[in-house]
Image (cartoon, rainbow, N blue to C red; front, side, top):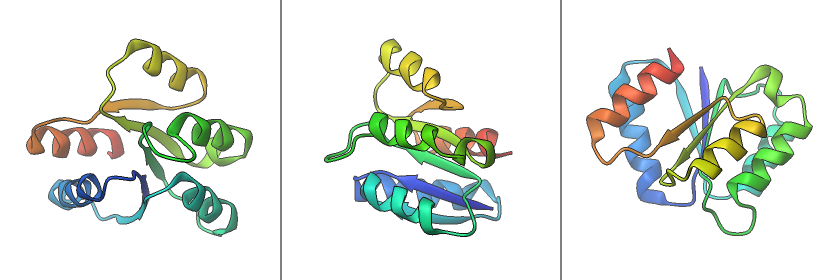
Length: 123
């Protein structure tokens, strides 16, 4: 299983990586600090990720713009896009789902909750 994490916060990437490991699910995680690099990888890579966890609040290309670009391609057919954000704003949740996000995960403050959430989403 291949998982992309698109999040500009290095600490959040490390926490996500540790949580993914704790799930016990065999998966390879590729982290991207900016959406443009992730989009380039998605366009040029032969093997598409099974999941893309996408933060909303990023510089340059934010998560919404990235999601719009993902929706324009065939990625939605092959990959589940999960918004992974601190925002619990109902408008953000509705907008991302209307743009094709499969799920919306509010970044948990508790590590065990993150492990459980990841396990449920990728099972």
